[in-house]
Image (spheres, rainbow, N blue to C red):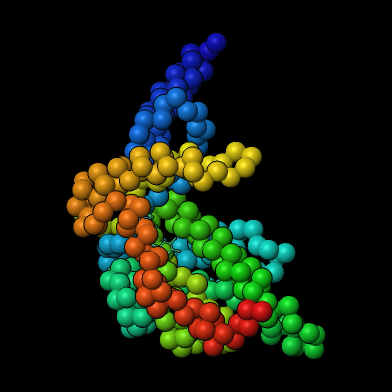
Length: 292
Ligand SMILES: Cc1cc2nc3c(=O)[nH]c(=O)nc-3n(C[C@H](O)[C@H](O)[C@H](O)COP(=O)(O)O)c2cc1C
């Protein structure tokens, strides 16, 4: 074997050994425990996915030109139900508009701070418009199924944009609070009927002064079911996760009372716990979705 090839192989193994360590470390951070016995496959995309963390503090630095278009190309590359493409996105960069949207979304500062705020839309307006222009019926659009399809399409597109942004070294955070006041958001963005903002997404360079840890997730024993679903067997996994998250909250100095189970159940305890979103059906109807 020529020396150059030996060098290449050694180099490759060395590279693999180095990245394996960090890859295992990412998985360890995701589950909070060593999972060295488990076989995980590895590549650059998986490393990007496993490195995800939401970013809530941004540098006042603009994005390189072409970033928005690249993110949208990634978003449009996601699968879309029947190729109907029932989603759209509004890119908001103007400080005064970001300010208004921030106020409607529980005054979250990161909406004002990020250079690019993307509002992802479930969009049945385009199909309504096309059908009307063709003089064809569009009754199917009045059903809950079509709203759900549009929301799923928008979500898949947005997550592709998130992965693309993170692969480019950018940070993101979703903003579900944009559903607190859907009709007002629609006014700010000049949305016609049959469109609703399903969530926002802050995009920008993370302020690296702020150290954001990878947030652990439930053990796979709770979310991964083989052949049939089992609820009661999740107890041990949930208990382990409660402990893990209490340690995580303490380490991150997060002021969260109780463990993950208590915290999560509080989030769904009452209609008022939904921060205004308990009236979403009414809001959607006001925005032209019949939800039959
Ligand atoms: C649909 C959706 C809506 C969210 N809305 C908000 C939000 O309004 N504000 C916020 O700070 N984070 C929001 N998040 C971020 C979650 O809090 C975060 O993803 C979760 O705590 C897990 O943390 P990680 O993303 O750092 O792993 C949202 C996430 C999703 C998927």
